[in-house]
Amino acid sequence: MRIATWNVNSIRSRMDRVEAWVQRSGVDVLAIQETKCREDQFPFDRFEALGYEVAHHGLSQWNGVAIASRVGLDDVSRGFPGMPHWGEPAAEEARAIGATCNGVRLWSLYVPNGRHLTDPHMQYKLAWLEQLRVQTSAWAAGGEPFALMGDWNIAPHDEDVWSMEYYLDKSHVSPPERAAFQGVLDAGVTDVVRPHTEPGTFTYWDYQRLAFQKRRGMRIDFILASQALADRVRGAAIDREERKGTGASDHAPVVIEVADA
DNA sequence: ATGGTCGTTCAACGA
Image (cartoon, rainbow, N blue to C red; front, side):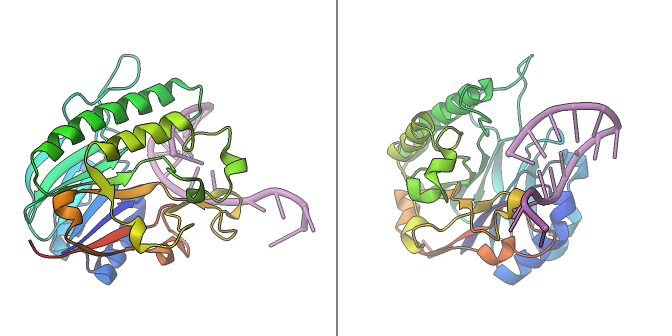
């Protein structure tokens, strides 16, 4: 079974590329982030024509997560228990959706950006990750195979950014963010992609300042798997080619190959 | 050429 995660940065403006990539990659399940649309705007018909069921969670033009699967899509959850809200007044955001596909519990997650070190959004990000840690601990205790997939907006290691000097006073690399990410790992999941990729492999390149052409990227998209699932991972890759050309998302798809149970 | 962006929705914001 081939499973992937991809921040598409608007499903409506990206659907032609997404469709081409789905067919080219042969993924069985795709976790999508930043659909940037409401439920009534999501192109369900395009996925159904490709043979995929889709569960989507979209509340506005921001955020939005989905899971597309051609190997079953059951027990869909929108949000996770205790997930913090944002804004004044505080409102739910579409940042998490879970579904069981072929016996594996999969989550598509869009972790809050944090914006700046002193921005209130950073506290929201850290609180969101703390609650995800709590939930991950509970899920891991069950022993079932599951994965947390998505855009974490954190570069856990120095080698995960093109320049630590550039990011020193910016979000995504700060000690509190890295500690929050490590907290989720310590709750019972492991990065199953890193062992299959070279150091300095990135998943995201800013649209600005020719970042992709200058190889100025970050590794912020991850697939974290429970032990039961990690034991079945046979390979992984980051499809950097998909970042090329006109109409590309600023994120590349991340793919794992999983053996049958 | 010594800087170079995209989405949302339509002035400004988010990333």
